Image 1 (cartoon, rainbow, N blue to C red):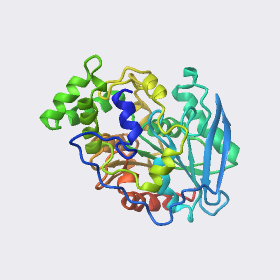
Image 2: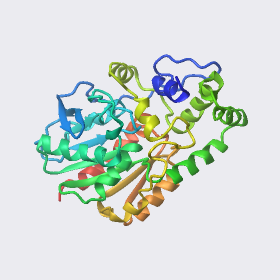
Image 3: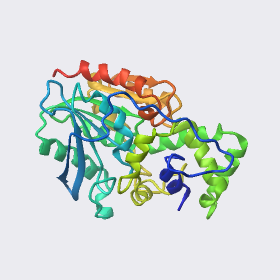
Image 4: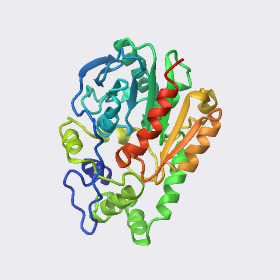
Length: 332
């Protein structure tokens, strides 16, 4: 496996991966009221196959539901489970994108294009008979949310982009600046990773993990979430990731290497758009705040004591921002 596969398989060390000299991070919180089991689950037809959808709460309740889109490309819905603590107030819809998690896996690269992933949203909304909903995307899921929101679709109560990939150039600039700020031994190991065959060495895995622990996740998932993740058919699909992004951490060689969604930012409804980032996020908060300003003055909030997986690192602070935001935009 490449270092990206090894890191993802352990999420990062939470599934038993042991890297010498690197202590395990603390276990993240599991909020009271989290629902590990769905109230409903189904396979929904979308262009290219069927995607797995799980629902907690009542779709016909008084508040519009929230649908959440995972990152990657190629991750899965497991790290959103803390959000189900809100299911008593509104339905929480989690799903796996095609070829990820519990969804169908046709393995056809023709499906791995941005418009088709965006089309999954409309298919899910229509299948569930939802009139209005809130849409949240993280990281690569934020790219999907950006593309979706820029069309001003009917029934969009609000849009939340957490740590989004908006511009590959911006992402790589920030990632390499964060890399340059790592300790010298970590930087040297990461440099060696970029040599042929270097990404599979223990030193490279350890250095990449050190970067992840600084800017991707400050905590490991709690045992119940780790067990849920381990039970998924796929928690990370490296074939999609490698095709769309590439094998290296700090350079993109895949189909997203020239992605630039910055022209879409002014097309968003700024009054109904929220940008989020963790304080230690690899999606640098200052950059994400700049996207908010470009999106007709959308709101930006920074989640303290959190990195890229902010909902896992500090779920209480995350939902303290998200909950009131959604409630304030429930009414059209």
